[in-house]
Image (cartoon, rainbow, N blue to C red; front, side, top):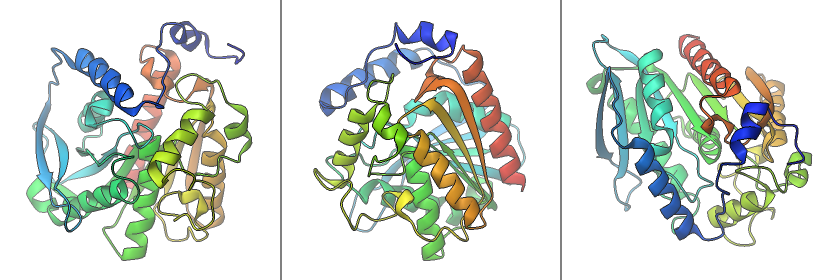
Length: 314
């Protein structure tokens, strides 16, 4: 490994399986087995969990969601719409289950995790449409859910971070639900893969240029990434007008091909008058928080709670 990783992360990398999304079916099967093992016998004290399906875009199936509500907390509570990662082709609410339970318990907040449709079977705008539909449902049903509709935040990791940014743009442009804060964790924002980090990090752990390219090909269609006319709702880095978006916080990993597009997006938000706070974690790679026992993962978690807590109160 030629990258100066945090020592705790470097020790864990040697035991981590390589992520390869060139065979989506195999990657999904491997992830499902890993998540099933991780969740076996899990207990979530202090949190009520239930699943439901909410109306999606017209003409498509309802969108599955998992709702987390803290026990014995009087409402109305703030809410967090949670959008998982997985390169647009993998994942479910199980990916971020531990984080969602922690956010629910510690903020405290109602956390709604979206099981959006995946590419390549469902390319853009399917996932974004699902996320926006659930945001609208959450706001419309705030009273029944015990949620304060004026305190809704978006939280997304990787592809979910790009979907969170796209959902914020869509809500602004459609006059949709008010969003108090957007927290973008290692977000996938730019299909062009032209930044220094996107070009340089071809062999980084978990995520690299090859996986990023495959991900965008699946989401936008083979050969489409990098071409003119890609919607900014799909790739928010292409947006030319960021004014009026909700305040943002961004988590950025040092050795991540997505690093520079996140830093550039934060700068573009600030230039548009949108508050945007960035935390860059040295010695880290995309998905480094999976090494949950590491000091840096614990700092990321604490900082995420702090950013969302302050954002929902701001």
